[in-house]
Length: 283
Ligand code: AMP
Image (cartoon, rainbow, N blue to C red):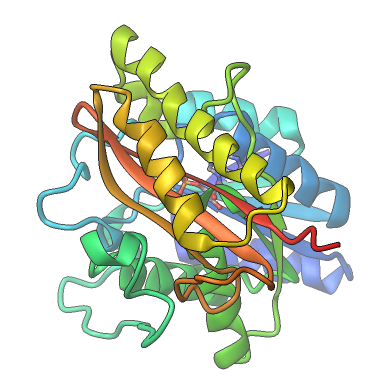
């Protein structure tokens, strides 16, 4: 497995694969890889001849007061995970490689990005769309893999690929969880012991909402209230948002009769965690 830091080095390698008629999969990540990331890589390896994992903490998707400088990084460990999962190449550029100092072109989106995480992070999805567009141009993969853990991101990327005719198949992958239900995240590393225990409340509260849907509840407000009520019982949890939205448009839903996404962002101490579930099992 190769580790490549520049676009100039990367392009001929991919062109070489293309000449051989090989298919290429891309797994974009910000590194500090865990089993959630690994599941994406393993799936990509199963569906493509060569898999590129990008490992880049993208500065443009962080807001000014967010955790860009403290975001955990460990290239050596990431490389071992990628190798074990069967990736052919890790692309690990420095920010200067990805952005010119006077870079002034961005990819932005009018809908889908205003609610949910976009409310508290108004520039986040512009950064995501821009970096993912760049990676798509640099790697030109057949398929790209994204986790349902970041459900809004997945919906945004699907829409961007559709609207801008990228011609890349976007593959969504299920959320991988710790044994107690906490969704795996690089940011879980920020949690102290007490916070780690408290963080289970995200999944527990969502599970409550999911059970209500399974039992036939179709009132979005009631499900939202139940999830909020459950989160309220955990003193370390501070809610950013809980929303029940249409799975495709991401618009809030009252009367549930189409696939929905129930999503939340909650601070546990200073750490902002997200989780969600989708429901489409209508009888
Ligand atoms: P990140 O490094 O956090 O930007 O994540 C890179 C990719 O891995 C994104 O597509 C995420 O949705 C996905 N991912 C992160 N955590 C998980 C998880 N627990 N389960 C599945 N996919 C995940």
